[in-house]
Length: 326
Image (cartoon, rainbow, N blue to C red; front, side, top):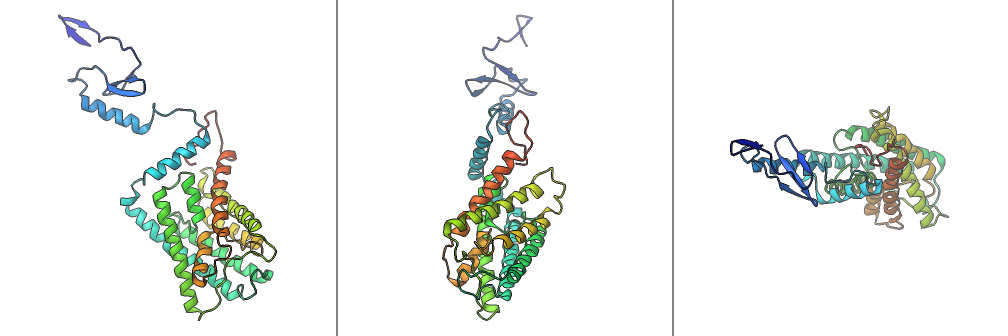
């Protein structure tokens, strides 16, 4: 209210909607934001601009309320690619990347050395492993995955697997910047583990993931998609879903699905579910036959699991937006 000629007068009525704020007022004019005609002594222009930027950051009135789940997914992915979320200057990011390096090294070292000890790489290419040998390999991978994911969960999330990392990036859980660092650390760790194992074992044969004798690349690809889908689906259900009653032991329980999938698919596709687990042995041996299967399959199956879980397993209200955890 202004004082004019000794009488109080009201400011002119706005032609468009007036949005009142605690310390400022702004007009909405065809999507543009501008300072209102308010006394500068009461409402300093700088304060008004600061408040407007705050509202813009929160997207409280600039973002549509009703978006499809797919639109939200695309928006998250674009934001992740455009903004590293401060990871580049975050010491916690450095610790997380180092944790992925150490944990993936230990996982691959344990899994590959167990496979070497069981003699799984001694037969002709594509030969089926005896069930006792396959069971030993599955148990080693299950125990290693469960313990190491638990050990690193509070530092990096305990991914140990590019398929897990990429799936979580697609759902908006981590930035694209951190994803690149995680995957690079995982591949480096796997390569170092397998090269070191060849030296420590005197050049023993390093088992490489390979398709079964009667399995085509397309069949192996579909098998890897399904196995990785089950791994990530369980991860979402037990660890990432806030409704889960076993979140504290969820990382340990993920080892069970790793072991079960190894038993189920080991003699068909190799049951990699993990591009890093396949990459290290390929680097150490120089055998890259059908190696693409162990990248394409997991990188399709992981994000697909996250999408399906979010679409069908998360409680929905009339608002189609997913809750903050997904």
